[in-house]
Image: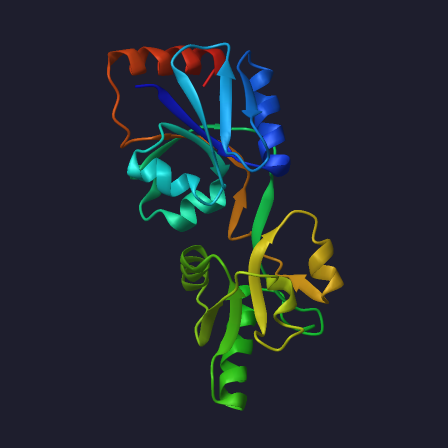
Length: 230
C-alpha cells in the first residue's frame, strides 16, 4: 500500500497545490497527456498522487479511498454530513479563497440584512402566492445559515450552472454562491447582504479518518506531515 494524496486535476488549483507542496520539498507532477489523470510524487517515499476533480475529493476522503486530499472548505462542509467526524483539517493552503454569500437584486434597496430578507420573503409570498426562490449549489450550508438567521418563506432551487444569471433569467429571486471578487455579481446587478458570509472557504489539506493504513503507511504519512509542517 501507499499513502494516496488526492489533488485537483486541472487549472489554477492544481498548479497552486503543486507549488505549495514543491516549496516544502515534495514535488508533484502530472504525467501523460492532459486527458490522463496520472501523476507522480518525488521527495518522499510511499506516497502516490491521485488526480481528481475538487468535487470528488470529499467523497473519496470520506470513503477512505484516499488518505489525504486538497479541496475547498466549502465542498467538504457541503458534501459531508458531520464532516469533522470523517476528515481532519491539517492545513489551510493560503489560496483559492472565496466566500459563500447570499446576494439579492441591487434594486432591493431596503434589503441589506437577514432580517430584511425574511421580511422580503414574507411579502413576496403574500404577493405572488409562492415562496421566494434562492438559487444555489450549496443546499446544506445555505439552509443551515438561513435557519440560524431566522429567514422563512423561501425555497432553495438547484443551480449547477451560472448561478449569478438565474435572477436575470427569472428562475430565482436571489442567490447563494461562492465569490472571490464580486465582479460577476455586480455585472448581474446583484448585491451581497451586509452580513458575515455563509462560509469563508479556501484550499485546504484534509486527512481521511476512514482510510486504512499499515505500519509502513503510518511512517510515510508521518514523514510527509513533518516535511509539510502540518
